[in-house]
Amino acid sequence: MTNYYEKATKFAEEHIKPVSGKIDSTKEFPAEIFDKLKDKGYLKLLIPEELGGLGGDIYDHCEVIRAFSKASATVGLTYMMHNVGLNLLLNGTEEQLKNKILHEIKEEGKILALAYSESGSGVNFYYPDKTRAEKEGDEWVINGAKSMVTSGTYASYYMVIAKTGEAKEETDNFIVPLDAEGVSFKMEYWNGIGLQGNVSCPMSLENIRLPEAYRTGKPYSGMEQILTLVAPPFIAGLASVYSGLNEAISEEAIMHATDRTFPDGSKLSEVDTIKRHISRIYNYANASVSATQSAAMAACNGDEDALPKILSARVIASENAIESGRLGMLIGGGRAYSQFRNFSNYLADSLAGQVMAPSEDIIHQWIGSVLTGQDIP
Image (cartoon, rainbow, N blue to C red):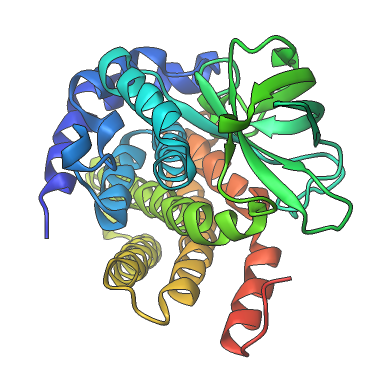
């Protein structure tokens, strides 16, 4: 076991929590925080020690995300996206290009993100509908569009999945630099209900030309890479985001109930209904954290049931966060409605969990398929 959670919690208290309100109100990407993440080494958490990183694993990944998400779910989510892109880079990229990008991450603080979702494929992002890559000589030419790209315009490299053959499953991942000619974003389309600073705006790719090295893995390995390199840290990471958010709701509920005093001197925390609400929120948070830690440990150990545990943790954490957000609003009452407390922001952040790809409906299908010995559809 590592102490990454304790260190990340201290970092979050010092650098993230003081500006979390600004992130929500301005809807701006937390670029200054990422500068500090670079200084403290968090951007290289998953890079092996022999390559100049911290040598962290998926459990460390989850614990750091949870700590960050308690202070700001936006920071936890955008940091998670970087780590997921990094995992793909480390395991599926030509050596020279990999070393180049790793150097930029470690020394310059450049970050990674995913560009998967499309308006046509929706939550089935692993089967791109609009984006296609075609080989022309020694180069790949990519055309298409992505509907919601986290860290839009702020990441230096985007992991883009594109159709490369005729069959549905014939796809590949490509590393697309932000400064590649033909890359553009529609920032004006970003107006999410919650997670305000993650800037998930549409991305256009027009005649992007990339050398062969920028395609990751073997031909037609898009779905395989998603299942082995992307899904585990991504879905476990989402579970961590919503576990941290649930813990934040719990702390806010306890603080508000113990601070709120009635004219007769009694406290809101003395009301039996409020006690029950607080208990339920705490129980939801505890269950989410426990499920996520268990799933991450199973992944570290290579357990056979690691995948269903990860998928289940994601559902548990996101569903619990929504219910905790609702109960938090009841505890906060008029002060929550008037946004005097953070309850309304927490509820808004939690609602994204229902639709964020892969959505809960898709996750339930995946769990059922895995548990009954079927392929993920």
